[in-house]
Image 1 (cartoon, rainbow, N blue to C red):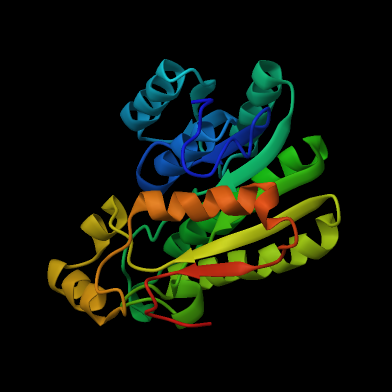
Image 2: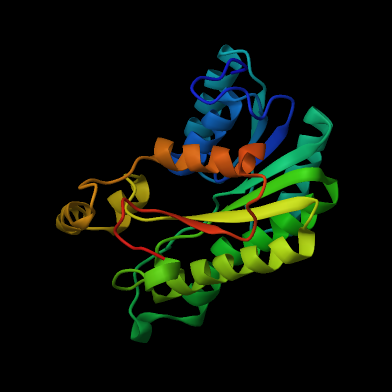
Length: 256
């Protein structure tokens, strides 16, 4: 997808890794980055169909992409992803960490240590492993974009204490990484609110979604494509004086 639309080829000649890129926001990010010129390595865990179809869509439009299965909580799988990206594209310029999830809604009495550790590993440890492994290969001007959440701002909905805490950790990591990796590499995050994805299809009741969407000033849920456009901006030089930021995208439901 070398001929981008709307915002020009702002990532022409660059390489991006998108983890959790097989569905929803991750898949939309992979497609959008490719549209503006990036070669894209798509990591997925269970969404092979979505990842493979994204690669097909990108290559059909003249872009470059590949998909690789891997568990981003496992250091060996992260290393394999980074190695494959370097072998295929010769370098890394952008990291987009979408890997994460709520796992299950559990109140505090229901939270087991196993559940707590699983949520932390999925959201936080995976981010640390990706940055640790890829950072030595990020050149000057590199950009890291993480997915935090509105839950990092407000604690999340019912049964989301572990998830909100994990995303709060991602938010704080972004600030620390921005200090440590600057000035060569910028590190930012986005904090989505109610976005129309399979996350909410799975974990949020329809009546709750309707109520939350209606309470936003914009009166609706967001789309994965809208989130991907913000990721594109933070990944590109258009946001060259932004680092350590956690940017809300929630239709005005929560202001920070």
